Image (cartoon, rainbow, N blue to C red; front, side, top):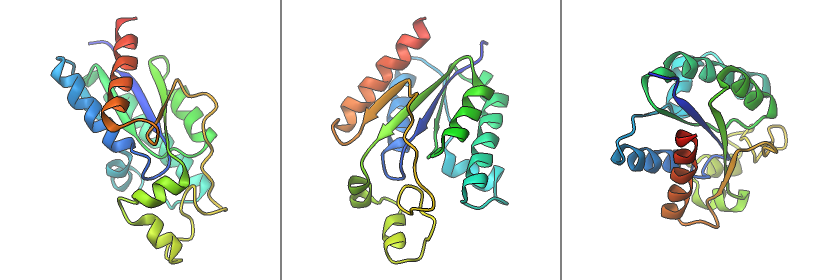
Amino acid sequence: MNKGLVFWFTGLSGAGKTTLAQTTREALEARGRSVMLLDGDGLRPILSANLGFGRTDVIENNTRVARHCARHRTKADIVLVPIISPYVEGRAAARSILSPGFFLIHVRADIETVIGRDPKGLYRRALAGEISDMIGYSPETPYEPPGDADLTVDTVALAPRSATQRLVAFISERLAA
């Protein structure tokens, strides 16, 4: 089997990265593709339990996830990696480790929208002062939007079904190339 193509999702917490990855996996599997989903939230306790959430630790976590992905990418046609990946350096490390066959997907939603969605209650906790380093919310831990995304999916402007269709089309084009 060839190396699986890697689609690395970046975006704020609550932007819809994991939801989009799950619906995309279902759509691609229905078309007969083998898909591996490596969720950043699930991998962090396994690969990076010893790390915090400061810039250096977040970049190190991204690097560890990319290396893990590199070791397992031959097990599927497509690897979907929803992970906040907030810093240019972390995404550059992932691209370096996983290229060729690496595609950066920016799952875009503005801060007001993600605060309103808040599926994990993290923004509520940040607003209450319980989380001081909330990525994209705290001034000390900004989210750096990518200038080099291969595709941007705006989950505010697009309904979930349309967002999935857009990503499935993008992936299908890469598989055909």
